[in-house]
Length: 335
Image 1 (tube, rainbow, N blue to C red):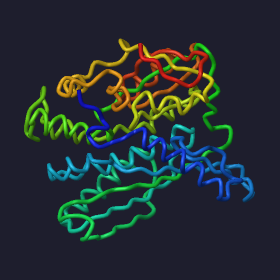
Image 2: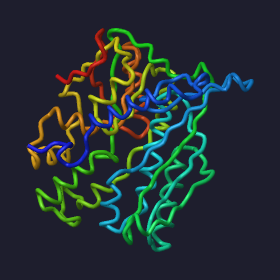
Image 3: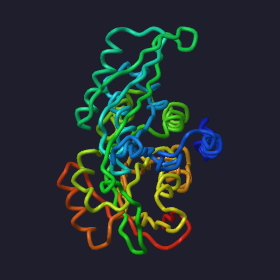
Image 4: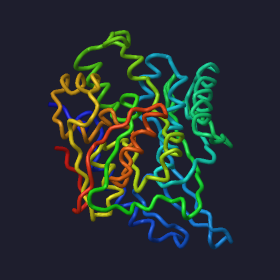
């Protein structure tokens, strides 16, 4: 059995770093900060500047999915991933993405590649109704090899205080899932080891009706539009990224509630089963690494469950009734 850690990614080490960062930041100005480090996006009050508006911010990259893009010489979708990883974090707080900045680091790239990267970013921002207001390119020949690059993004959002998602949960609330487009931009260190090293697939290998390249470069879903339709019913929301269900959902539980996910309520997505079989991966490791077909989770009052499911289904995604909230200590059970 192979694990994410054995592929080179240590989730626990990342969590320890977050704890260390929290310790260090106590030395910094923080009177306007109204959220703690470790959330999906940070909230900053403008009250001391004479406004009741709340800013949010998030930063993220695309990870080693970029290696697949470079292998396939296809670069027009990872820009969408870059935007998605940021704006999907922004909306979890109830804020709306306003603007975005990008950072592209490389050694030597063709103009075509740079153009495709920016085109993907713009395509993602169109879907997010957000502006591109700046960016940075850094050419570093002693850091990257020819043809290699890395991407990072930074997004700012805005909301009125009454628009913020309060995470005011109660026993019996309904947990709903919104469909992913596949692996999104997480777990690719493990995916690449599974597909290319163990199974010895190539980019041209056909699985179902798609090549491996098409499956692995499918861009991350952007949930800004559907969330806007749902926001009046949402009590808490979760972007399922690195860490899967076990690491992401507890961020909104405040150590006072547990979430129970009923495994048979999740979609059956063949590619996750194929990955699991290749590596003989345990269920716990799968749900701690991948989104398993659910890229975003919202928690609503049980009485709003059906209307929320209907909104999702009518706005371009599949919706799933995944489980429920119960009193507890901030854990996730998958049964």
